[in-house]
Image (cartoon, rainbow, N blue to C red):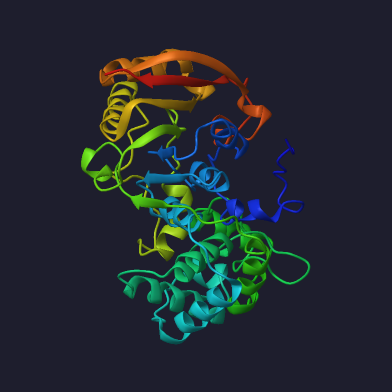
Length: 372
């Protein structure tokens, strides 16, 4: 069997997995390997799909999949992993959006320093276009994800890749901190042609898309059984839920959330988000997800969970995930727990939000089966 190549330069079919840099992802290798031995026709579910890594892995294997996530940015990115569109179609959609979208731009020091006035006008045209659309075509879904991916990031020496002044590409700096950074370094935003930046990025990402498969990603609360209605039944659940103590999922994506219709300022929490600050509600929330998943699965379905912990919370991942499954009390029985290595060995969730280095906690892969 030929070894699968995960490097995006050497294997263009995996490039779409990197359409939008996003913290707390788990590596494509993980779901791809788990799906390598399943039978044809297996239907895959990820109730914490994030940027759609499990769904993309299922697509690479020609398997049907569904994903749920309560973060609009995650859902928008993951939805693009399941559609097919050519560069020509994406560019046609971009030109149409720039012509017909609204152009009202936010005001304030941050916005004036983050984007060139003309670039911000074009971004707002795209934003207005998407907000007016009740339903998006495949090309528009792809375009939206491409723009989310280039909305902010570092400056480059050649043709610009990102639309903003200097900023991280995986998360958006808070406005006051960003302004101080730019002022101190006397950095002014440069004009970036949105159409040109989209074209360059689309040509790279869409050079060789994998074959399309049946799939759907929903912006929904995975704790609620109704969120799964109409998706059909699933044979395998592969997921990596948020870890206890992680609190930056929402505010770190505030600028991308603005592009999708959110406020012009940072929001720090939303009720549809899993509770991550206190152990009791956190476990109760995860238990609700496991129950809802069980209701959407076939008899003898399997559940695979990649899970870890933040060093600052002093929790042991295996014990915590066992507790959530016991609370669910819906038939998920643990078959085995395997060591997955320390977070510092592979850019996992647990090392994404540490302000200083601490001893890594080993993550685990928990394998369960549904026993009715």
